[in-house]
Image (cartoon, rainbow, N blue to C red; front, side, top):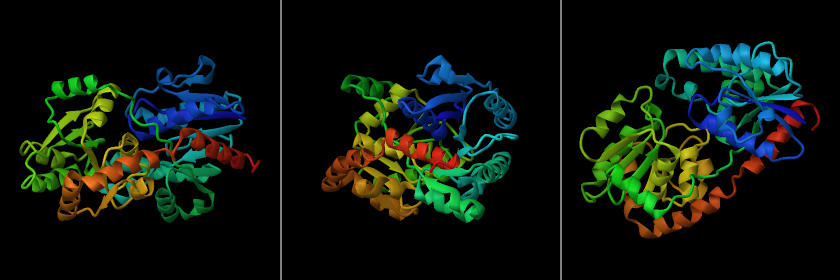
Length: 361
């Protein structure tokens, strides 16, 4: 099967990771002839013949890239089926295909997006769901939300869980060097992800401050770039020494953060899948997540779940910090849970979606 895959990777985040990992898994198969249409061919470990560069200048150039340049490149190719990996669909594209919708946070938490981004995502997702023959989502939660918001595509939604590869391995020496460079404490709770309103970093820091009344050694380390509406989070981070913000780090330092952490917490109000949480359980970190969105579905019993209010998060965080029986159970359950999500399984399920889009299944 000749497959065309779009991969906008100049914008960091989960969709870019998804596109890279899915492309790699599809390329390992002998029943797929893959072409990747991307702005960043340097981010793919594929042969030059599998890569088609479509230049992207950033920002509002997304409109030209997505709707005009991408479609033109695909039309000039020989692909039988096209897969747009990021909630949108090119104009004037007759090629049958699949779109992946990662989440609907723009709908469930519209106040956490700039107006321009919110309007683009709303219109782009609706358009893509009309044009694509199959709509892939990374969790049953996202599928239910999509069917509620866009019921016209409900019978074309298919759940394909992402794979979990986890952060790269690091040595104890690398982890200690990382800890020294950033002046981190011996034990800390890690949070990874863009600092923005729906991630509830401010709630995590406030809850940690409550726990510190009886466990003053507890600290929170936050890794991720400053995002939209992050003022409340940074007000809490800067209030005292409860939390330490590292900003965005490279892959090795990120792996060191997971290796050095004592535990992990993501009180995010809405995740389509949750790559950072998946990486934490893969590493065997005792993990605490919100009891909503896709996170309970992804983690199962391999994480502690909490309601999203300060007393609840504080109680759960205190338990995660002190309860060694719980911590040991989560250390064991996390990797076992993560092992059930592989990119090869995701590629097989996605290929089945391509067959349905072509009327072969």
